Image (cartoon, rainbow, N blue to C red; front, side, top):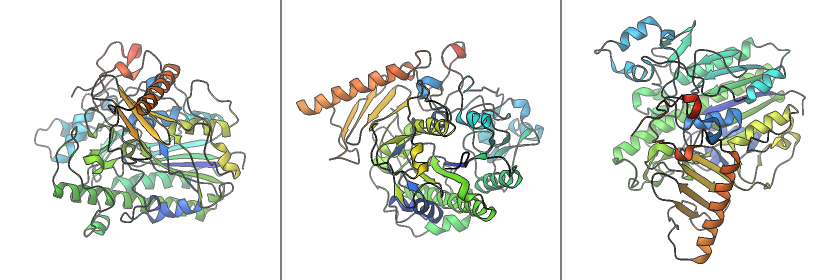
Length: 491
């Protein structure tokens, strides 16, 4: 392994593990992702730390759980200081007759004040910068104060918020946030990523985050190029369940289902095309052999699975189904990873921080729950791990998952759940109330492990089990840092 390989991290937004051809989906078109899986290592059982964007992204970056770093829901305030928004856009926000495309940025940005949600937590990008890497970001940041580079990044091309309209994104230009018109945001993010690659110092190792908003909603026809939307005009969409709406979710019609899936698949395929552009550039310029290329998503997504269109907050009480917490993961490193290899065992996004820190020669941080899998870059193909358990949380809902069982404990809202994943991989039959001593013994054992683990890693000042997280957005810091301010939008 090279002393300091380049690293490219491509992160999709709300992308289910099931939505790639290499994952077995016969309808979605992802030729570039499928090719990456053939060239590198595919992780069939990789998990996020929270089934919603901001907490999951924070955990990837700093290697800690939400109950350690304090980001427990998607961030809906604290994006930026409102004076950083271009005057013309602010004027539109004040105009009650402004057209529809201004509504979302008005709701999210008007009167906003920047909050740095991860101050005090070291990111792996800071470690890389300390070791001489040039670090670049193109696309979604969604961790507060988007107007200013943070966490070791020197190249900084963010969008203002989390998701956005695909053809009217609000982006940072010349020190101000302004709305682009008629620019497909997936292509915009790709161009910014390529600008970084074209302008980098060829004598320094580089790290690049390419954070797409795809395939996050909106999914209407007008939001995506016809060339991708029309690919799925006649698709039967048999690769996703067609079942009644979930008891905790929202109703939808068959027309709704088809329209959402068509837009979702279009967004995935458009992103796949642009990932291919980045890979092709790296190969053409001769840096591909020295680059670790990672593709993942912030969280999973149910697109009809369990009767839900959404992630963890696709229902209330919040859900922790595998379709919400399991994510795609492909890693390619031509100099070290055997082509076509498959990693066995359970992995989590909290493993990324110790993996990159370990590559830089740093000792494990005892406050980080993950463990490094850096051995894959030296040609090893893991076949199971000592850690065969992953954990997840969304506010007052927590999960422990082994290869065979899943237990979900809810501290404030809703019922607990227990699934036998061997007999019921689709998580259809909740066995919590089953009158069976063996089942109840397994539940008690998993509950004990869950509570012991969170007691070990949670910060009592930021612990999510007692917080009123509804899935409607986080608007302030929690705990002492928030000075008692209301931190979450109520349902």
